[in-house]
Image 1 (cartoon, rainbow, N blue to C red):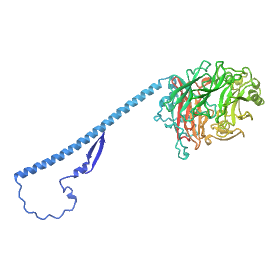
Image 2: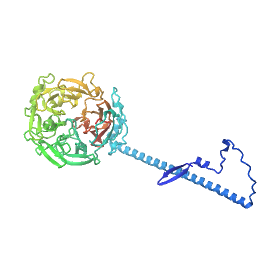
Image 3: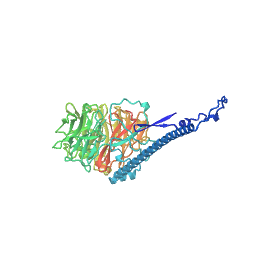
Image 4: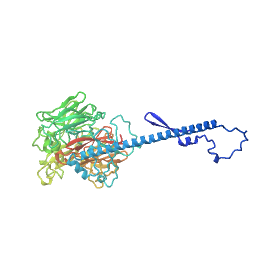
Length: 587
């Protein structure tokens, strides 16, 4: 006889198979109608007729056996009914829990939608908008799938973003690129509270917010985002501990920063686990650069130059030196990238000979002027488009972008000119000319203009950016600074929604991010360069700071293994930080 064992709790219940039980019968000829009849048995000797006592005994025995059989069948029926009741109860409880969870989720959504007018605006404008509260904890497994086909160029079919979970560790074996699946991503908010939090923008080569073991993210915490910071507006330099629920660890204060660049934070390539650079100012409003050690919890060096106060503008990714600029001059000529109310020894001069781009040795602390504004003006004076205004244009430098091997630096020589109606719209960039030169200051050369915030490739001769040539309008090209030629494009011709945004190549050169702004939203187009696999992020709300000196740019910044990006966002009334995690990235 067969039996089935089912466990409820710790007690097993044995169910007898009904078919087997029915076949277990005292009637051995039950199936005789389906079988050949056996030969008749031999005649038996006559038997005596049972007496009355024997008949009563046999009758009682038959009744007892029938009763026992009925009792066994009743027990089985009771067990089956009990099982059905238990199953029904479990299903009922599960339904109640699910309904309660759904109600809580709806309530949370309503709370999130009512936090600000801006939150309502963004959902009206983008029906598929991914709410900023989609990942309010470190668990991103329930991030909803979002499609934003309206934001994708019609010439390119891009997959939608879905949830993923990526381990925050650098101990990852090299990816077998032949087995990578489609890209997917999730967005997680990592800072909260009544303070603003930021990192900074594109402006240094291989700028990585994470330290060497991918545990700590360095950033700034501050109170106000409604004006350019002055000498009285200090920011707190912080660490975000990603191994401890994104705990914020205050380290120091700084008074040389702005809301676009931050304070030019950069982990020291010679000690990337424990040391980083940031800029500051003294009581006399003279700027300088700080080298901070997180193990010692103190500043271990300050790079001060009292006659020419300059500060870091671009660290060599290999270590050893950084390029430095006069941020007081920038504050006067292009406030968005300067430090307000700082000391400027060149005030009133159009193209000084004692200021320009500097190089500071990290070990010795010595400085060297690589190229002066007078040198830049001399290089540009014969060009047709600026020859008439160069003499009256106050020059400054933006983007001291070192190549990855530190042999070359790419920068923009710009000029502020307000003497003509032609430049009323953007007088601070009346002159906007890109240059390259060797890291020792030799070989100064004008090159073709690259739109947006350019990025170095892994080659020392290739810069990535936008060139408005026929056929390349939607492409990010590879511009050769030596031959002055376009040597292909990112992803072999991938069409980008916008090509003048913020570009970022992962440290291993296998992942690429193009971040751009669309009104009040930030959007990121990611490409796996090994096979041109691509994905576009959902729009991330950036608030009303879309233009001018307080604008929030896309500024995607990779981690060291190339499967996460640090990006900004706006939640309620505060600027906060998000991490985009990419599954199936080429690491």
